[in-house]
Image (tube, rainbow, N blue to C red):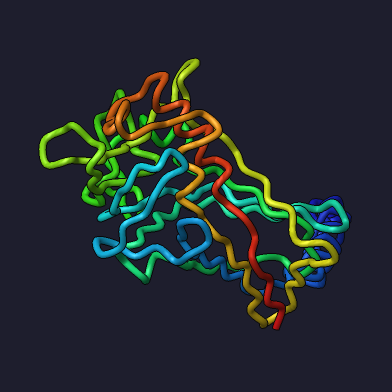
Length: 253
């Protein structure tokens, strides 16, 4: 009996701790669904693969057979200053309508702007074989040391002196002065906010205009019909297309 008395205070303390743990409230975050949709255009007109001839600012004609680009590191800026992040990777492919939109859960609240990276960050460029949007089978990967193609245009132009009048821009590069990785921040239209409510879906509609690929860094098809490796030309084209995104609509349900 004498040996058991000193253990009583410890036993009582343990019971109190366990009791407090059992009754500790579980805090769950309220979320809604955000859908982001992309409309690829040329001068505001929906892009048509293969069939439609377009004219760039230098009077050069071209058609497009492929148009793809990566979107990653999505960040929503909240009105109260608390950001919401989505660290996934998406491949937008005009040839596959199912890739022109994607959805994910976001904390409830009001948001005033959207940021993302057009491309794939440097870490994932050197992380070996990956899956889903980053699968090399998507034809958007060069090699481990040159990494991913961040954005791609393929087509034809009579101004191209390459065999079969080929037009081909495979834009990549994630290291040094010729890195093409440039985060983009899109402000919502005046007076508009994305309002995420529990159990509901809201939508941001983004236009991506190919006409921005040619300027302000002048890219003439007659001079540069092909870009298929990292370098100064790829950097200039990436500087141009970083400006192709515009928020065209917000739908709060």
